[in-house]
Amino acid sequence: MPPAPHLKPLQTPIDPLGLTSEDFVRACREQGVFRPAALAAYRAVFRQGTLESGIAHAALPPITKTLREDSPEGQVVKFLTQVEGTPALKPASPPPHLPTSTTPPLPHSSTPPLEVESVLIPMIGSLGLSTYTLCVSSQVGCAMGCGFCETAQMGLIRSLTPAEIVSQWYNARHVVGIAPKNIVFMGMGEPMHNYDAVMQAVAVLKDHNGPHVPISQITISTVGNVDGLRKMAEQIKQEGWHRLNIALSLNAPNDEVRAQIMPINKSWNMADLQQVLLDWPRFAGNKLCIEYVLIPGVNDRPEHVEQLAAWLLPFKTADRGKPRALLNLIPYNPRRNSPWPAPTEEHVEQFLQALINAGIFAKRRRTKGRQMMGACGQLGAAHIRARKLVTPITPTISAESAAAGTPHA
Image (tube, rainbow, N blue to C red):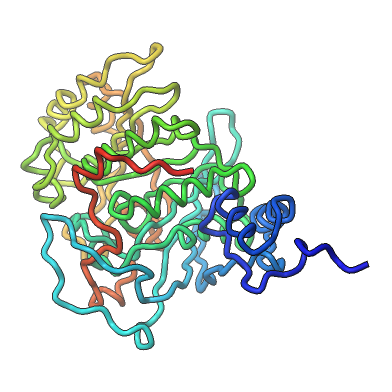
């Protein structure tokens, strides 16, 4: 008996990596494939790692290099994937505090491929169980210009598509062979500078027919794009998005210090950041994470502890007996040609204790992957710095678009 028409291979198989299951079902229906077959093909891609089924064809960026480094909690795995060098979408304007590059994009045929860096970080939880967190990139390079970050030294090459973001999870799970429990958008790039692609990728990652990563185990990190934060605040009010986590890279106790190391502070200062987080929607379990990279001689003085405590004071209002915000202390990981050294362990512990003594709910993030340039702030390819095109492929979020909001499936 010949196969049913809806089971025949499609003339143009559909790539599901950047699509939710409902997106994929609709696309298949347009080619005459009905829902049961479409869902079966979609699940096979994400659950069994089947790249080709006749209905689905996942264009997976290949892994070009894998690095491993031992840590007390397990092996850190950094892998590099290769993507096309030409932006998939038309470039737009850079953030207001950064100049527009005068270098035109290279023709597609002559643009070399690019490398995307992702890191699998081992974690041992309070119950002693070993898990992995996947640190994903949202862009190749970054336009934010933070002085302590290796990625920022590249400039922005281009933003990643939703499929290229989701493919990092796929490669971790089905190629490297490690299923991450958590996903953090803390790799290369500023997620708020590629907002629509990042939110679509999250929609795919949390899809119960796809990767099925609980929304409570996904975190978006930002250097402080207030317009993007306002838009995300509206997004998490939507059903199925309430517990999406946010992490703010504060990294300074006052505006003077922050403006020196983070140019974005010239557009949105610490008072702006404080207000947008105070206005953040409250749902059970969605604690605010404030990240503070401890840089010797820059933001590590005793008076800085007092200033931090004052900035965090409004967040001490308890949510069901727990503080509203957690300060995550991160020892600085030197970038290439860094003007600063890493802090000593003794100094990190002293600063952490001073924070706690000042009444700040603070924890210390353990350094993992520093030797292979896989730790926080160290991702980035030095050999493509000269190709910087400070032009994101999606517009910087404006106040008008933030007010409008863009819900996703």
